[in-house]
Amino acid sequence: MATKIILDCDPGHDDAVAILLALAAPESVDLLALTVVGGNVPLKLTVNNALRVLALAQREDIPVYAGCPRPLLREMVTAEHVHGESGLDTGSGKLLEMPKTTVADLHAVNYLIETIRGSAKNSIILVATGPLTNIAAAFAMAPDIIERLDQLVIMGGACHEPGNITPAAEFNIYVDPHAAKAVFDSGVNLVVFALDITHQMLITPARLAAIAELGGRAGAVVADLLEFFNQYDMSKYGWSGAPLHDPCTIAYIIDRTIFTGREMAVTVDINDGPSLGRTVADWYSVTDAKPNAMVITDGDSDRFFGLITERLATL
Ligand code: RIB
Ligand code: CA
Image (cartoon, rainbow, N blue to C red; front, side):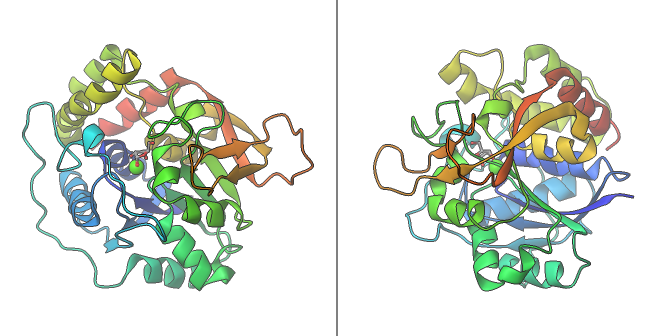
């Protein structure tokens, strides 16, 4: 039976691949909707990009709900330096087709509350691959939905790895650290894909070539997107490819055996200063803090990219 998911995202190249992977695994994933947040680029663009990706997959039947355009307290921080001005810039410079569909009228936070309240307990996995503003707002407005969720699976944080937007913090957490703290402290059944695991999932030339050689609608476009997405991180880290962060969350839902992890206590630093947005993980249980997250620590990158390539070929 396919798992019902709602994907809260800020497309963004890796969000786009996560959306496509979710659509390419119908036996495992029943994608109910996309809820969108400001993050990689402003909300107007992340919404438009979500619609574009659904159009690419010819799945305009999936509704898109616009959420919060900015963090709860802090000023907005975006990542055009990574994703380009559009948020989905390509190596060829040819952007994805403009969507023919538009965003739904209901606010994303209200959609999350109404849908989770209206569904059987533990029947929905909420996936979040952007700043956690929509999630924190929904939990604050309707705390009853927290225990109704089967899991909240996020891409965010950095335990041992240095941050990618500051030396201490990963982008999704840093953009809205107050929302992240509220979510990490909420008691939700939390699974965390931090940079510690996503930095093991590099878009190497061989992996990029395998995607480029796919037939069908998605392969060539995804390769063109990843061609651009590789540029910033390869020059920054000197690695053989950029880390493909967000699809880890969907791959986990499709095949949990690709990854391993363990429960640990994780707190989010909300103090102004150099550690703002740091996710402090009690990796070796040196405190008596109660574990609040399943932190994914290892994964098989070949199986991960094999899954993505095999599934993109079906779109
Ligand atoms: O730090 C990487 C994360 O921030 C990814 O989700 C990327 O899309 C951006 O949202
Ligand atoms: Ca993202």
